[in-house]
Image 1: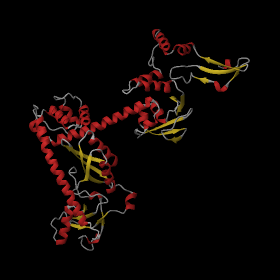
Image 2 (image 1 turned 45 degrees about the vertical axis):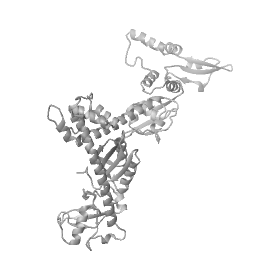
Image 3 (image 1 turned 90 degrees about the horizontal axis):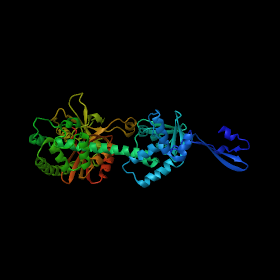
Length: 502
């Protein structure tokens, strides 16, 4: 290049020098380009080796012929046929949703289009398609780097992950507790990046469906434990499995599932009671009619329970209205005069009514001096019993004791170092459909901490129960509102007390 630029009578054009040897094109092209001025005319000069010229003139087929000749002469090694453009095409061809038009567009844009070159902190150069973002750079380095990315620095300064890379940028990918979101698909310009993101989201969806199937399967086993043990034709005594590992000892049975994850995924994806009964019948050798008859009897039980719960909720609501009537001030609610007001302790919440910060509360304190003050909702039967005993002057339960005025901590002092959380149980009534439990679980986990779940279904309807941990009544109300927006959900109620927290 130096000799050419110093030829007598020629004037080099400094802006016309291109180094495709240090930065090869994705199609394998390598050469040095420069332009010279001679007597007012521009002359382009291309400098390359014979091998580079062979590839440039006859394409990559000549590249493989050249490599084959080297291999036959005893020269070989890993990556003999590995070229960036061929790796990209091979990766695109492996996609399930590959379309011929999209494939051609990708080749034109990413392989034949303009490129951008950026640097990593260790000096490595990334060769990306023009318009690539920081997301593309992260996945170009390694798939795990992209999946764990939580931030990006360009030239030492933080930038959003949607930043479009420019030539010469120094890219630093910050990894740790990152988690891709569907929004990343908008920022990913490379087909390879989008393919890796789609694979990740499919994997997460698979895990979510499997967990849903696991809840459905083991809830059903728990509910039908007696029928299975009494009616099973297995030739040995057994106990109902409680987790996937114990379930694996029963597979395949007469089902065709050898893997527990495949079975749970199929159940979660199907969300069909008939499918669930059939698989369970084949695994534990239980007559299908026994399970169907049990489900029919449970249908009537669920209907009665739903009606009873609605009546119970109405009764508690009317009782609560009576007790918390605005005409009755806090100091006059059947608590002996002169009794000091105490602050409620979340660790001493009544397990029967499960009060939450924001509820109207009252306390009970046993006759022992070191007895803790138990926090109750005003409509709790135990609180009512203590109030009635206070009226009569006779303590019928020494453990329950006498009523105590309770209030929650002031908002300011509570918010400064808030670490208190409360248990609550939510009952969701819905029209049964596929992925209902999975959808409700996702909403619940985003707005609270799920501790336990239970489900029961009939031919058309489904009852879901969630034991959750929340910070206050407002957070619980937000969760219930979000659950009410889930498709096919008919009602969402807060249970008075808990059936799951025992």
